[in-house]
Image (cartoon, rainbow, N blue to C red):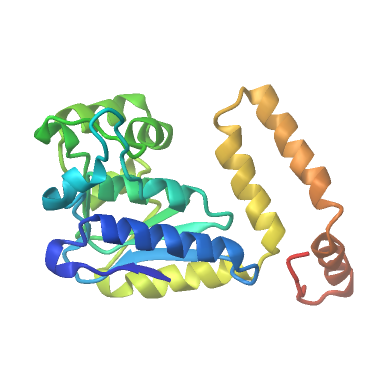
Length: 242
């Protein structure tokens, strides 16, 4: 479990947090025993209030070349499924971080907003691309251009989050979901994630071919053989991620 731990600052993103998150994601990708990751935050009010305004200049390096530090890219680059357990407000770059996850579960008190435009900015960490793919172009356009806040109920209705739970049940629910997923074949989980994420950026024909390629590739793994054997022997499979 990865926990954003700046509750006194609304778990806002500064350069230190961004660097630590990138390092953690690298470590996760190198650990072949891990099957699922959960990202959450300390405190009860905010999952992530966005970029720390006092450190925004640190996110831009150089006068001639602009470099914006991303927290969404390391999360999106994780090979395994990622659950965002959103304990409170997810705003600005904080929402962009959540959008980079594969599943989003939220406390009933959480709020969501793309707040960049209120500061004369536009999103730089994926909101203009990921949000329309998740909730549709019209709703994404309204959220980004107006900066409106939506509550957890509306977020669930539009598909921004898949499940709402009382705040005290958020982590137990996320952990239960992670355990269920971890009981599946590791390679199959990764391929399913890759098929969905990559396929949505392809034509239907290309996406179907990509899905088929991954399916046939999966047939060469030991886990696939174990899955068939376990089914025939009427026992629980013992997947090894090979």
